[in-house]
Length: 252
Image (cartoon, rainbow, N blue to C red; front, top):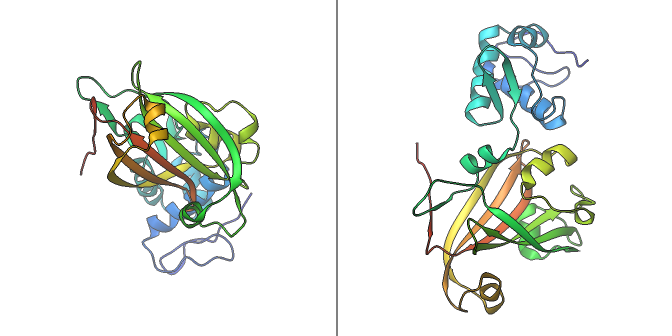
């Protein structure tokens, strides 16, 4: 079991690692995030009680509760009344709420179905190296797939993953829910993502994949997904037809 220093000088830290003068609950949050990142608690599994965590780290139960509240607000843990706190899973409902923003014009949000066209291992190009912070000569796994919210594909997307993190992913069937696969098989939890949107014209190849006309307008979404420690672990470029869907972002 990892030992922790008691509360001193307004802060706590893991043994040998001072955490400075951040608010105490933020220091506790950093400790819990590190445990999540290290896979101490499996996706879907329970965390120790607030009292147990407080006693182990050396802070008050209220401080632990405040740290857990922030993790819950970021969808990294789930609080269940009367049952405790659990590591959040990348189930379809969570991905639909947090990461998939295309909504049918005439219907409720739903999770898209995917058809994998190609999975290859290649040397990373300049865009992939910059987005994923890779060295020259590094390899990526590239996944090309179509996605649909009905009978017709609306999205063609290319995902680029660091091969060192996801070695072997190219040898097995690629599931529709990739974020769950990342967490369960590779211990990589997607915590946040950055997206850029731009209107583009479809290339002939992408237009053919989507059954559209070359040059037809499409929405391009560039996403960099970040793990719990803030490292970029996925570059996803999606080209979306928007005649029947719109991009929905809730601002709070």
